Image 1 (cartoon, rainbow, N blue to C red):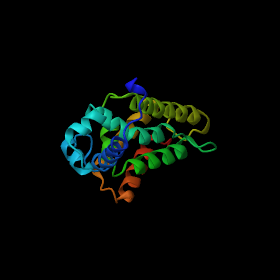
Image 2 (cartoon, rainbow, N blue to C red):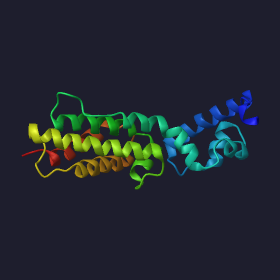
Image 3 (cartoon, rainbow, N blue to C red):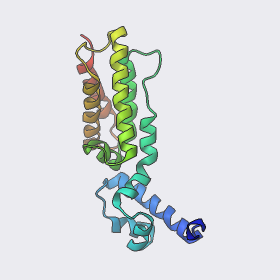
Image 4 (spheres, one colour):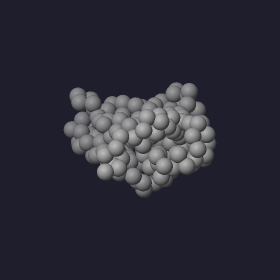
Length: 186
């Protein structure tokens, strides 16, 4: 019977304050941010934070889920060469991640740690397959480029986004250009 009850208004407000504080803290400091700092920024006790989000991963997943959904919805635009489509994808992806340390940490950390991340990475790998398939027709990519190569290059760009100041989109564009020159047919 207790499960049918609506949460109290103050509990809903606390959850929203926690999510807002966590979004900022995770974006600025990454997934290793101190949970006490998030609770303090939200104006709640650590117990309240853990009542809403029992683990760090559950909080990270709640905050980054929307961003992962956006990445998982990305694709190669129709009517473009594989190389031009990858340029748009790599630029859009790295620009979205620039300044979002939590997303960079999640995507660059290695094996997926939650279902949203796993789905996102699987989709990005599928985009690589599509680019390779398209390149068979338009010959814009080197013939030995594989979907795995494309996925690794994107992960490399994500690592670079960790190092580039959030305001330096020119540097990021330069690195996208370098990667694409390496993938391009000669």
